[in-house]
View (tube, helix red, strand yellow):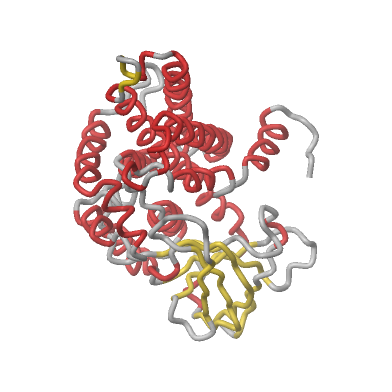
Length: 388
């Protein structure tokens, strides 16, 4: 993104247009139908992979597009704006693909990146634990050496898409960590490994992607399951969390656009007292406010992606947190106002809005809560005393 004129490069504009056409081909009707039937969105996922959209951020030598997180974020935003957001894009190509691209061995890259790029293989990400939550320093999943190999034990919770994944990139900690400070290790765990079990968590969300609790009972892994350096994993971990926040923001932005588009169309068509309801400022002004907030959140998301792709991890961290916060807030407002604009129709399945009420609420919680974002901004952006 050009820092002077705020316009995206022609290649990304063309990418957005192409992805929007793909999203339109499937749309929210397909997405909702699959979710209600307990089915996946495999047709869309595999077509997006075949067209090169899922791996646009991954290295060309491993089947990717050789671009950056900004382009992958654009793909997710456009699919979400068409009514069919793919949550696993946040974890498979964005987090896992990025971490392996930057820190994996040549063998790990050859083994995983081509499949992640074309959609034929999926890897999900596991950091959250029942008793840790936002405090990743309290992770208790431990990895200990067994000769040259690893043995991993612990629990994880709210892990997306495990039933669709070939492997999980698990964040653990070394067993000999005695200071209480985080010393993470990143290990690739195949979902069919002995001792690895998962159980679905029932959620009040309409989504093809499900949430799971993981149980790791002395899972034996080869030495090459370790991604990156054992003593430098903290930097490697955060290399994946910035893309997670950027993609989370894009997920929210796309849904906000979808809701706003639906609301504006309805406000132009629906007539009461002889005129379209959009003529009334009680509807026109809230929709206009949402448009403004949406564009502001999108700019911050593009800034975060640009900083990340330029190699400025710290600068990207601040912007990525702000982008995720702003996008989640405008998505909630957009869906709420779209429902209000439709009146009773806003909660009818036919209009594709009611299920989004809970979907966008997730953006305030994951991948990091709004309160933790505010803590970050208070401490790192404003220089206030640490509050936790």
